[in-house]
Length: 219
Image (cartoon, rainbow, N blue to C red; front, side, top):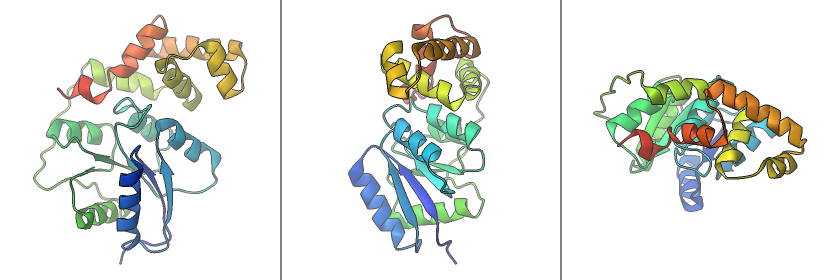
């Protein structure tokens, strides 16, 4: 029997894909409430602003603001009870292995049939790790990227949000306005971010974040 009365987040920046995924899975998972996020910021806002207990996040690795694996790492650090399943057009073994290494409860290629999507989601909801057929996970060695992933996991949700805004090129004054805090608060966050990431300035912090982007780690 398939789980019912679920709260599921689809985090993907393509509205047509979100719609198709929701429609396909709605027939398999009855009375499910579907929530959508088209960016890392929108996903964070959903998780922070609601008292709803979500059952799973279906996560695209390349949403705006995600910087590859960084959102996955952030979710697994600060929302540890919430399963995250990566859904990606990147289907190579290294991408899948890294996703599982960073805490994903499964990996579903976007080329999968809707039947496979339903099977994978059901497996994860019952506590299993789901992988595409024939995938053999690679051992992920402790390299510079993994070290940065560990440092990123130490950031608080607010510090992570500020770091994302640094990556967008926003000034401290703009970030303070957007977050409704003082510029001094943003400077304090910046100091903490630099210390935790082991960098000296904003530029180095952004470069560190970019190390986790798909094209930086999977080529």
